[in-house]
Length: 175
Length: 422
View (cartoon, rainbow over the protein chains, first blue to last red):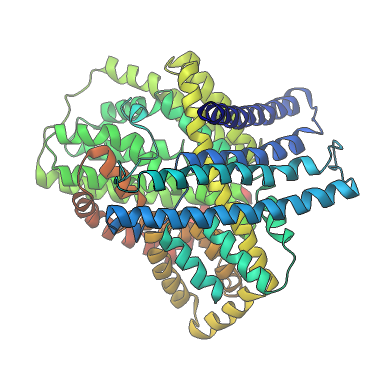
C-alpha cells in the first residue's frame, strides 16, 4: 500500500512537473521561431493548452495531499483540537462526494465525446483525451481526500502539529 | 439563495474554496434542471485558455527567481544605494519589495522573499520590531499591484479586458503606493532614530549594481515586451521562465537540478490551486448568466447607488470586507461578474475598476483577522499574529488613504495605459 502510494506521488509530480516545464519551453520556442525565422508551429498552442488542463487537475491532487488548497479557516482556527478533527472529517467527506460527482460528470462527457468521435481542431487529437483530465484528476483527488480522512480518524485524539505553513518554505526564505 | 447559504456553510466547515464554489453551484444547477455534465464542461472551459496559462508560468518564473538568489541581490542593491542615509533603510525595504513585485505576481511571496531578509536587518539597525514587521508586511501588498500580477490576470480573464493594458495600468498606482509607504517609513525612522548602514565605497556600489542588474532587467524585458507588442503576457511569462533559469543556473549559479525539482513542485501546488478555483468559478459564472442574476443585481444596485462616487464607495467597503476573509483571486472570480454590468452602465472604465479592485483586495490581505500577509509575516518573523497586526495597522490607514486617491483619480491608472495604447 505504501509503495503504491509512493509510486503515485512520484507519478503525479513528474507528470505535472514535465507538463509545466515542457509547455513553458514550447511557448518560448514558439516566440523564438516567430521572430527569428518567421515560422509558426500550428500545433503548439493547442498542445500546451491541453497539457495545462492536465497539469491543473493532477496538480490539484498534489495540492490536496499537501493541504495547500485555499480554505477559509475563519471558524476552524478557533476550535479546540478535537473540534478541528471533526470539522476536517466533515469537510473531507463533502470533498469526497464532490469528487464522485465530478467523476460522474466528467465521464459523461468523455463517453459522449468518444461516441461522436470528436477530434481537436488543429492536430486532430481525439477530444476525449483532454476531457479525460477531469475524471482522472477527480479520482486522484478522491484518493487524497480519503487518505486525509483516514489520517483524521486514526489520529483523532492527537492535535494537529502546525497551525500554518507559509507558502514559501523556510529554506528558500533564508537565502 | 440556497447557493449562498450552502456556499457559506461549506466555507465555514473548511472545505477548499474551489470545491465550495463548484459544489454549491452544482446543487443550484440541479435544482434548475440542467444536465449533470454541465459541471465538468464548465470546469474544463474555465481553464481551457491560452491567456490563463500565464498564471502557472508567472508563478514558476517568480519561484525560480527567488530560488536563484535574486531577492537578496536586489536587497543588497537598494541597501547600498539608499540604506546609508538617515531613514534610508526603510526606503530600501520598500524599494526592494517594489522590484520583487515586478518579478513576482503574488503578495505573500513578496512578504516572504523580501521581509524574510529585510526584517532582521531593520531590527539590527535598532528599529522597533513592530515597525519593521509592519512596514514589510504592508510593502508586500505591492506584489499584486505592480505587474506582473496573478490577480490582474484573473481579473482580465473574467472582465474580458486586455491583460497588457491592466498590467500597464497597475504601474503608476504601484509606484504611488510605494512612494507613500517610503514617506511614512522615513518619517517614523526619523522619529525612532537608528544606526544607518556604513556609506558604501564606489566599488561596492558598482558591484551590487552589476550583480542585481539581472533581476532588474527581467521586468524590463517582460513588461517592455508586452507593451511593444513583441509577445503576449503568456509568452512573456514563458520568456521569463527561460530567463530566470539562465540567470539562476549560469549567472548567479545558485540554482541546482535538485532545487529545480523543489521549486517546480512548489509552483505546481501554488498554481494548480489558483487554477482550480478559476475552473470552479466558471461553473458559478455560467449559472449566474443562465439565471440572469447579474442584470437583476445591477438593476437593484443602480437604484441604490445613483452616482459612480457612491457606487465606488460601496464597492470599496464590500471589497475590503471580502478581502479580509477570502483569497484575492477567488474574490475577483466571484464578484466581478456581479459588479461589471453596473460598472459599464455607470461609464466607469473597467481597467480603472480592475485597479481599484486589486488595491482593495491587496489591503484586505493585510487586515485582521485572516489577512494572508499577516500570517506569512508572523511565520517568517516569529512574531505573534497580534504583534504583526498592531505593527501593520498604521500602514493600513495610509494604504486606505492611497486607495481613495486611486479610486477618485482615474488618470493615475489610465494615463499610462492610454498613452501606450494610443
